[in-house]
Length: 405
Image (cartoon, rainbow, N blue to C red; front, side, top):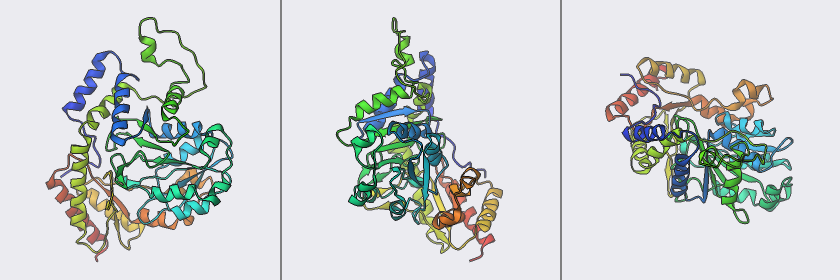
């Protein structure tokens, strides 16, 4: 049996939506992007959402809008995909890495210890779709001792009056925290719609705006939209209308817009996301948890507590008391039986670009512990019960062969 790790969900409704975009004669940013933005607003309960060409671009755009620049610091978890830190580096600021907890998510105590007078933002990451402790992070940034350290350098920073919380929710579209879906628990939330995500546009991202008064999230949307289109006062769709050719460039912006032909994929998927795609992911996730709970070596991922639930983006199984080398051998044996698995993630301090910048994995012991023991299993709606049974049996057999327990 051959089981891929994470194929995209493409059905007839997706094909029809994409074909409609292709046949319309309009494939770049236009009506389908706007429709997807509106669907995301309805789903997450945010006031405004902007589609972008990637979550990385989205994070860069937000940080730039907040006035973060050279000399500033942004706190990120050490255990995440590189894009979280690269977005900070690309705008000239310094990513300050902190350790995570056993639940894979950023440690609030570690955040507090890392805050300095240069800190302008925090980027918590909802690892595997499990939401961070946003209540604790919100309380932290509003503590008098933390507020005293915040020195605003831009108009947006002065208006907010504290450290910005920008959630990297690349994994957590559809997750629930304190009985509310992700998207409204941070000042700004960024989703990824990359090809392997729960909801995909092949490549793409979405900025969900939930800033407090006196900010106008609709006005911020207009600003970010303009900046994502080279600072041009009219998008290409508006320019294409009869007599609408004249435009101006009013800001030295970026090229970060989401095309209609990509948005069409996500538009078809979001219409069946809650009742079909998310529930099918939960089916697989629950089966794994039930099956592996029988083994003493299995360290199950967090996924459900009162008022909070995962988006079931990944199933990050950890194996108790194994080494990194043993984990790699287990993966080899699993692969030899036709099951594609993965590891999420190699902690950033172990990657060359960050090692060369002075980050050391020894400073992040929990991140390394999580990584060394972790194997991500296939989890997607198309998996059959037969395939799920096969995956569980192959994983259990492979663990026993490498580490008889």
